[in-house]
Structure formats: C-alpha cells, structure tokens
Length: 153
Image 1 (cartoon, helix red, strand yellow):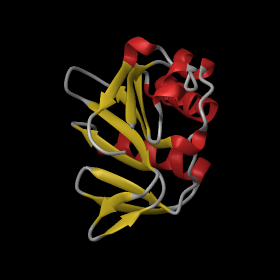
Image 2: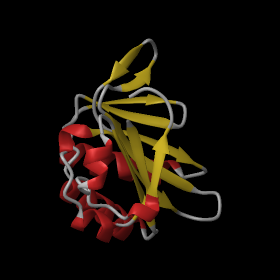
Image 3: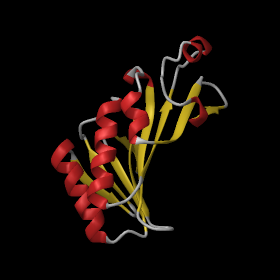
C-alpha cells in the first residue's frame, strides 16, 4: 500500500528511520504569508514536463517575487546541480542530485526555513508498505500525521 505523512516538522524527520528506497515523493513547503508560499519537491519516477518526465528536484511557487524564486533556484542549483528549466510557476533542476534520506531532507528544510524566514511543512509519500511494516513501525514517523492512500500500490 501507499501511505503519506503530512505536516511533518524538521524534528519529526530527524528522528525518522525509514528505508529511503521506499520513498515515492517528498515535498518541503515554505509559507511566506497567508497565500504566498513555495515548495521544493521530488518524485522518484520523475516530474511531468511536457511529454517526458524530468528527473531531479523541482520548485513550485504561488505569489512569490521573482527575485526570491531566483534565490531559491540558485541555492538548490549550487547544492544539487542540474539543468535549470522553467515552466510557468515551476522550476525544474533536470538531472540534479536526487535523495530521500530523512537527514538530508530535514537539513534542506531547515536551511530553507532559516534563509527565507518562514515555517516549513514536510510531506513524505511511501510505496510498498505492508501492514507488517506498519505494525513494526518501520517508518518511525508520528502516526497522527499518517494518511493512507486508497488504491493499488
């Protein structure tokens, strides 16, 4: 089954002990105002761009000044590389370093929060999680932040 943990904090991730190979997707959302926010995200199987997926990190933004988007893009590009592609309110770092380790995601979220002076929320989605995995607390994230995703794995 697929499961999602949402509204996670940096502290939640710093305690997590999940198998990185089962992470399907992660997102760090940074709030900049009531409606202003941006997110950094990654999909294991690539992010849709035209007809082909782009592999690497991506950014979306809503009501964020272009200079802030450029600063975030520069920060990510200098750390993780990749070819910068832009499409409407999204930026893709095609071929950038990909990761799902909880410590790396937590550090990136913390760095974003400090640099852009805003609170962050982290979402993680896992695939191929059995009922036994859940009983054994394989993921080690707060159960109160768990959402099951209906459907086939």
